[in-house]
Length: 172
Image (cartoon, rainbow, N blue to C red; front, side, top):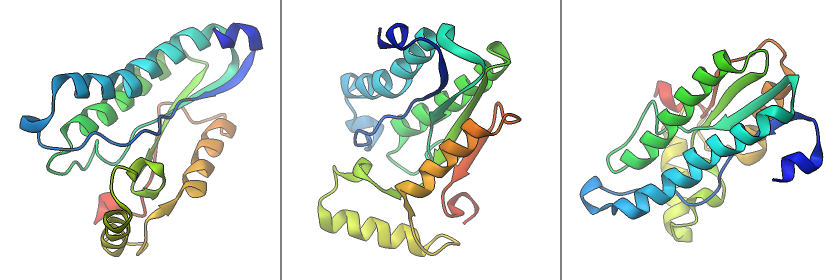
């Protein structure tokens, strides 16, 4: 594994950027759902498992969940399962791996390739509709979410935390 070639790590960030698996559970194939869980949960689990022996004791792990965990919509069962799973894993690992810090960034709707399964018109409508319903009046930018990962890596006093970067969507 590449981690053993690198040596000691200060931080591990895990995020997956494929399009979301959205749709009613009745229309969601088990193999597609398993594939989404494989990429977003099991791959994160394995990355963490194999990186931990190489992470400096004052280092950190930051993973990714999403707004589907605390505020799912109809047709978002797989996404909600993934987000909730990542948050539970991080809280458990914050205790188990201490003093290595383990945290999660929970982004809301952000202009990114995550929404590439929508055509350009649908994507624009999504950004406009979601943004208008948020206290910030807009959707986020990837650079704004990236700042949260950097904060959690730099903050030596944050562990077991979930930083929500969603324009206030969970409040609306």
